[in-house]
Amino acid sequence: MHAYTLSRALPSQSDQMSLPAAFDGTQPQPVSFYPSGSEIYAQGEKAGALYQVEFGAVRLYRLLADGRRQISAFHLAGETFGFEADATHHFFAEAINATGVRAVRPAAGADVSRKLLPLALKGLIRAQEHLLVLGRQSAIERVAAFLLDMAERQGGLQPVELPMSRMDIGDYLGLTIETVSRVFTKLKDKGTIRLLGLRNVEIVRYDTLRNISE
Image: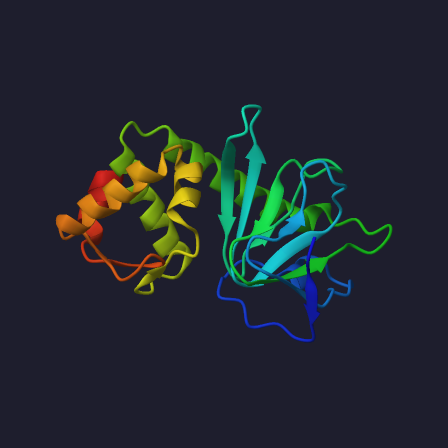
């Protein structure tokens, strides 16, 4: 794990509960900086802290028996990850780009179960939504739902920032990188989106994208 600590964090961009609020009476750690592609924690490692993205983005993934990678979630600035049902991490966590992460550990003997419940429920809802996306039959439906989700999580700001690569998106949606690229091109040619670069997309027709995803 390659991390560097920073004395202060950039402001979060999400309305999620902050970790200090969830763990009253605990002292959050300094922000740790992770270069692009560096590991935050590994599958099988001991869990115990929660993490909040201060800037950048994080992917959670698992390596399948045949060597393929399945991404289960992306976490953006202000979002929380690392919550586990037991004492072990079940996924790898990795910085997508230059990322700052703040860890918070509950004080010894503290009962934070009630404060963790909202975080657990939010994680459950997001996992269920991901399953619904994977259950869609066509690639264009999956990509449309993904773009709408990313836009919503960024407060509807334009353009929508996509810190992850096309390969990441494919590993998240169960598609090949070629299929993801073809769908982006198709949506662009239909005037539904504008591609402002590999990492930025402007949604031109929200209603059309919504109809595709439903």
